[in-house]
Length: 127
Image 1: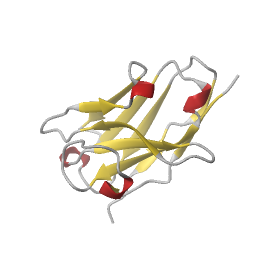
Image 2 (image 1 turned 135 degrees about the horizontal axis):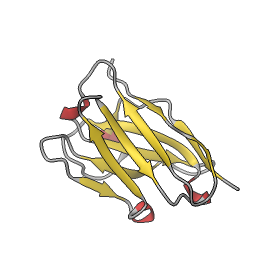
Image 3 (image 1 turned 180 degrees about the horizontal axis):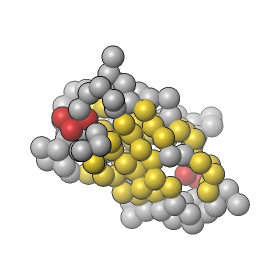
Image 4 (image 1 turned 45 degrees about the vertical axis):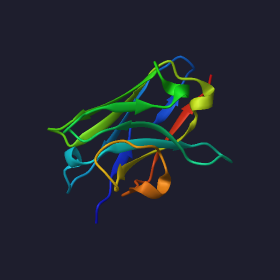
């Protein structure tokens, strides 16, 4: 079964940084567009960032994280990262990664287009 696993969350002060990892043990992530989502308490899951398959490698960010978050891919480790800098309390959420099933390029964040969801990793930004 195709599934990913997130890690790297934690508690950080405002202005701090975290790096999240999204890994798959059995399937090559290189062939897929991978997106990061987050879900804060009482809110809907929202897309944060996406990276195309290695064929194109383009990236996308929602406005709220542009200039602060960076998505990248380590093909050798079969892992996608989300580097989060200048964190704000409003970034507090459970962060998930998922594989885009419909095409190998990023094309929005409709949850129905994604699968292989992991369990998520908690990010808390608080002083």
